[in-house]
Image 1 (cartoon, rainbow, N blue to C red):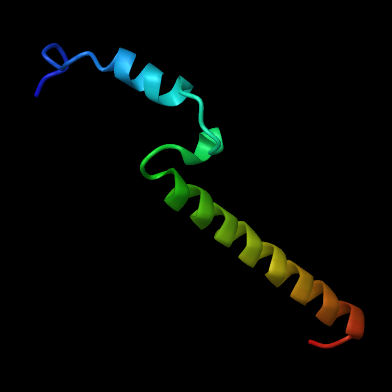
Image 2 (cartoon, one colour):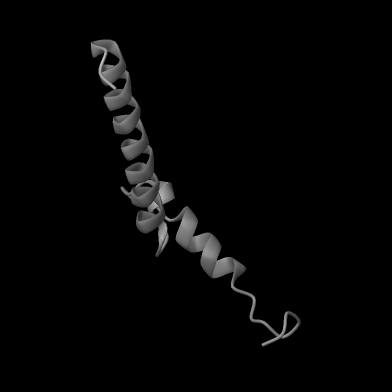
Amino acid sequence: MSLVNRPNNIIQQQRFWQAPSNQLLFLRGPRDKLFVYTTFLVIGTGLAGTAWGVIKMARGQK
């Protein structure tokens, strides 16, 4: 499939993203939940590790 002969899906995509919904915009796409929750997991793990290290340093442990 080349770039020239691809179907134009702009109108369908525009209707999908602009349709009224109770779901958050960044969670509407087919893979968006995977990306968002993976990012939250990585950030949460980093924050937990940082807090754990700060607590160990405050207690004077190595």
